[in-house]
Image (cartoon, rainbow, N blue to C red; front, top):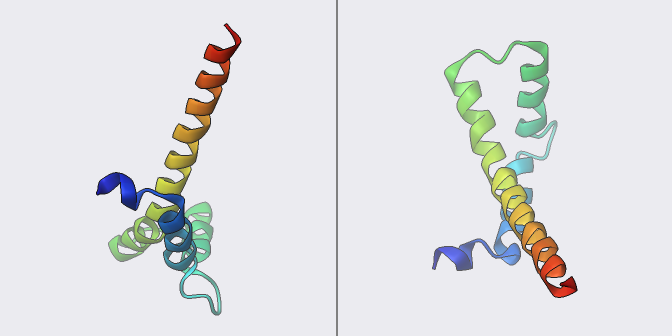
Length: 80
């Protein structure tokens, strides 16, 4: 069941909805990254908010990394 939840058809919409909500005026993830860059990300609620809106993108990036790594390994094995 866990591998089913890591399919792209679930990860991409999840990353877009949670990662970019609320869409107006500025997505929370963008706002929290700006705060992090400015050094004003200090409150625990803001840190939690950054983690909450970033985890789907991190999960999607991990899945992409695993898939790309597997493709590269299989291509190298097919050459030999």
